[in-house]
Length: 88
Image 1 (cartoon, helix red, strand yellow):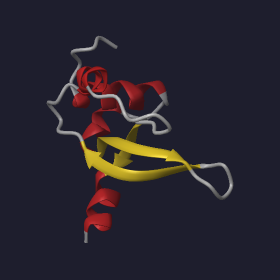
Image 2 (cartoon, one colour):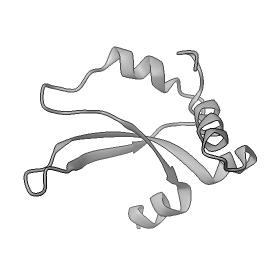
Image 3 (cartoon, one colour):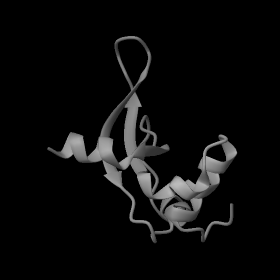
C-alpha cells in the first residue's frame, strides 16, 4: 500500500486480503503496538497499545518513529469491541 494510506484504508485492504468483508472495516481498528521478545517462552510481549485514528497515516508514522534496540512495533488489527472491553 502507498505510504500515505489512512488507517481505515489499511484495515479494509487487510480484511479483503484475508477473505473477510471489507465493508466490516468499522468493526476493526488498526493498533500501534510496541513490545519486545518475552523472557518466558521466547514469545513476543506487547507493552503499549494505541488505537490509530481512522484518518492517521500509520506507514508515515512508522517511518518517523522507530523503537529502541530490542523492541519492535508491529501494527495489529483488533476488533473495536475487544478494545472497548479492555479499556473498562
